[in-house]
Image (tube, helix red, strand yellow):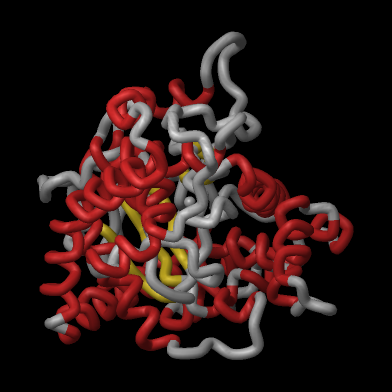
Length: 379
């Protein structure tokens, strides 16, 4: 899966591929994730390459439709997706409906959540005319790629994946499904079906991406050079905590949804955790809850958090929460207005998704044909 502003609509490059045959990023070998010239900053190096030639990059990113996206999503990933798309990078956005089932038995209210997720994307600034927004279940060939990909990794490799271990622990389930265990392989299919060569991720997702890179290399070595080996574009976005000081999460009720009303936002912030010290400062290591609120206000204002803290000074928690509430509501005002317009036309939402599904399915079919040919499975 990426800073402060919600950019206004702007022109972007045309998609690199449509339902008709078109160029895709060619299979190439790359250095291990993060590796670059000695002494260089790999994040800055890759950002410089993207800035110099954005049309050479295709990004796959996405979310599970389990509820409304929140400010943590916006500042962590959504703003970066919009930035990269407007720079001219070819953007694929996955509504990962099958992956809802990794940690639950049924996908409740799935249709509602899918439409809400697409509305959040569009309200945040993703342009469907130059991005491919699609859902797992509408692209059969993507999911079929899991079968040959599973043959390229071992049970031991999946068992040792630290991200899988963390997700299994976080699920608090007595047993986990095979879908969760093989999630990194499904993710590899997501990334490689469209020959994505760049994946925005947080540091905790690097083990998943390394599985994708391993699968691409092994397929290319064993059969034919079909896939690019994607690079990680590490997010430089700060991590926002929830209003209770824990990790921001839809399920914990500590997140401010992009669709939240001004009153709902005010109520959430009013009960946010602070401390007894009236002097407000930005000190994440020693005062994480207060600093998190300061950071949220600063992100919404596009300012340095230390400046925001200095302005509040000795105003205490009440002044801090008032500043945060005003900042968040002002920041979300245009996003809420756009989202309301989008949700008023469900037909448009469904057309956006149908067009994206069609485009993604055509690409996946061609990729699967290449895979079958490389594996001598054609007749």
